[in-house]
Image 1 (cartoon, one colour):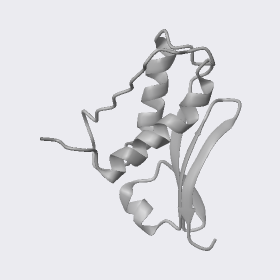
Image 2 (cartoon, one colour):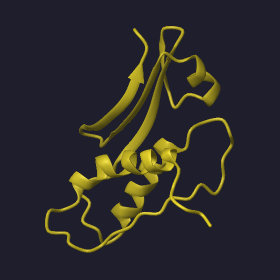
Image 3 (cartoon, rainbow, N blue to C red):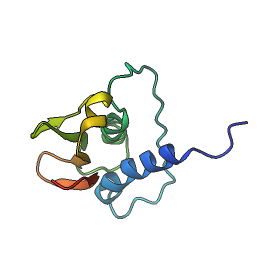
Image 4 (spheres, rainbow, N blue to C red):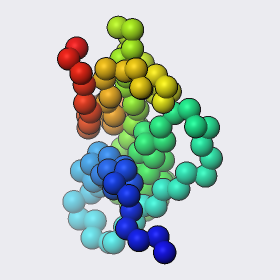
Length: 117
């Protein structure tokens, strides 16, 4: 039995939901579920930002009235340089852990933590 999702899965679901929900048209009243499965993983990078992008793509090509497609990225800070979609090893050394989601026009969500920078 699977039981309830682990804490990481719940937090990933929130990362997906937060930037997408405001872009769905106000009158949308149909129950809608997004299910994300990792089918292939290289073990080098987090799959969370890709889950945001994949969920947005699925909604955008469906009948759900999503205003704009959304993309997500992780941002790290190592050796005084920002790194987009860093590897898991780089994130261990990073003093910044950000997940950013947005459209080509605006940033919709910034979630993160940082050491003193």
